[in-house]
Length: 385
Ligand code: PMP
Ligand code: GLN
Image 1 (cartoon, rainbow, N blue to C red):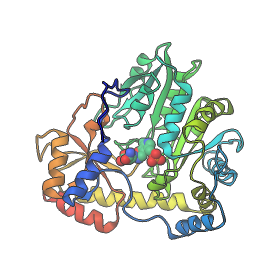
Image 2: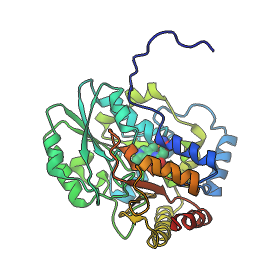
Image 3: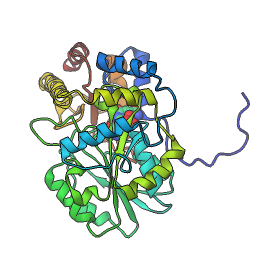
Image 4: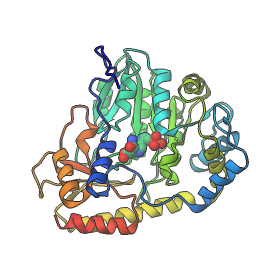
């Protein structure tokens, strides 16, 4: 291969390979148990796989409609009506996307002009910043502080300027497992009232909220829903992260802009998955089972680590558990997870990867979306440290 002979002015000069790719590769290289990148190590339900097979045999192998297969959009509308009492129009207010990543990227591409400011909360999921910067937007960071990582609304208010175009929120929160309360949503609603600020609400962990708490979807708050793109991912909900399929809801005026961008970013999404999911979504009880499954895994994980030298941080939702390790090591979090992978055979994510300047608070994230056997082996190694 020849090498490119000219200097490149990178659009993303500070971006390297994502930490999820880096740590999964390191885990594989060392044969470590991979509790780093967030994905289940157990399979999707066999019925869902059978439905996918049937969808291909039934001839759903050409382009689905640009906005998503109508049967899937109908199933999504029925879901949000049943769970949140939210009425979304199947034709104009729901779009199926290639994962939540593409939904978020598309909402930003559709709404953010060069020079616009977008507020995100640190620690921040790694795709938000680059999505904003690729549009020429400016990322503004609001800190969620240790130990409970709760939003400080007075500080968020102080960050709002006439250039603030968007706020991206994420509850349940990756990586910290924090779940926002009704008071948080009311505070946000009051902040954006009478402004032109739009919200992207990343709710991919909406069904993983523990201990009888309620998921405070933006969809429950009319003053927020009227200005929000709400994103959820089938990848998390049905153990199919590799299918890369998700959806976005928004009022029709916002969705019209979203679709202008969507049609040129992907145009449409893998068709057979859409028909399979539309059918599978009719099964009752899935969301309750999913919550119980992950709450059980969280409890096993926390119970075992409570007798270790790791210090557990709260985990109210998601399939992630953050811990401090200062009783074990004074290394930086990257050095620590690399050594944990190499020497002790368990991979994790350094939470500094979720800060723009790599702020290191000595916190690492484990993913507990793993089979009982995987968790048992990993925990046996972690409690010995
Ligand atoms: N947002 C958050 C907070 C996530 O954790 C993830 C993936 N783990 C995504 C978005 C991306 O989801 P998808 O795989 O559907 O693109
Ligand atoms: N969102 C997943 C996580 O937080 C990873 C997704 C990815 O690898 N980009 O681990």
